Amino acid sequence: MTVTEVLVSGGFGRALRAPGGSKITIIDLHGQQAGDFVALSASDLTESLSGAETRRALLSLYIKTGNLLISSRGRPMLRIIEDTIGVHDYTVPACDPSRYEVDFGVPGHRNCLENIYEALKRYGVDILEVPEPFNLFQNSPVTTDARTGVVDPPSRPGDRVTLLTLMDLVCALSPCPQDIIPGNGLVPSDMILRVESE
Amino acid sequence: MLLMKEPSLILPPENRIEVTGGTVSAFPVAKGQLLTVKDVDGGQPASLFGVTVADATHFLSPHHTRVFSNSFILRLGMRVVTNRRRPAMVLGRDTGGAHDLLMPISEARDGRAYIRATDPFKDKVRAAFAKCRVDLVRVPDPINLFLNVSVVGDGKLVPQGVASKAGSLATFRVLMDLIVAVAAPITDERLWSKPRPSAIDVRVHNHVESA
Image: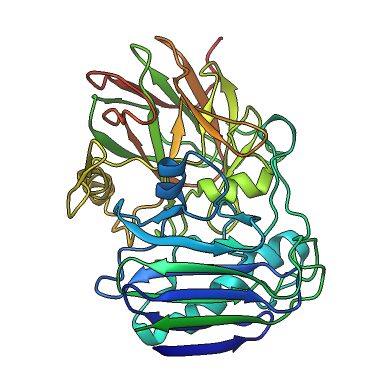
């Protein structure tokens, strides 16, 4: 058994390789922290985890233990094998420079898109190839009439999600740096990204 | 035409494009023009893509459009925004009834079992943009006009088929110079059923037509 574990500082990003058959665990260390997670096929970076394909397969806005998460080519890429919280989002794009500059008048803010890109570029991923994220622990409830809004996550310290990889992957995690509106309790905090493989 | 204090926009000529069933067509649309997408025979969704003339990495995004308006579906009066959160067009008239911002379109699957290595639908989208000298780095996810996928309170997504009847249309006021692509995709039995794809009529026009 090989275990690779990184502490991902709140508002920053890290990436790891995860061979097929390994387990990826994401832990919310302090609670109320959303983590933007992406995965790409290690053998072909143009194939990535896809929210749109997963929605078509699951016919649900939410994911739960046992669900298969689907790639941009329609192939199962990950299976959720453990989830202590059951509240996640995969509809909201990664926050990016324009999120802070256009919506809040704050240019230069840290953001998930660039965090993920900075973590993945050593694997040869261009910023334009960063896929839409799965926002673990993010709380985006359906409100009335097919509307939504992001509120703080209900996750507690130590809540975790474990994903079984169904192909060789590179993956990245960005504990979201959003500290202006609800989403992380206004205080970005650290997470663990762990890969366990035989 | 936009009613500006100091009129400066000179709009290009109007255009009409018939997108035959199963094909994709791309064409320019200028800031201030109107884009009308019509389901000719009914029961046919139209997938909408767009990139800015200035920068092909700046494109229409269903994901940012949802978040920009806190809505899982496209509604009358909503702004369609880009991946940089800039308003690119507004849905100003709608007789289509429902529009999807959540689902993919693909021709790579055959039922639920067989997946081709490449996706002919994405290849068609790329080829259509290439005819307008746009080289896509990746094909964005589509905005699926007339496709009706209900969102219920517990997050379930319930495909309801295609909302449009013969002649149903959606008209957008365009706010950026764009290259737009419209597709009339083949059926996806999981989302809608139509034995043969039918035509989508597209008009790029400079004046509002009488309802």
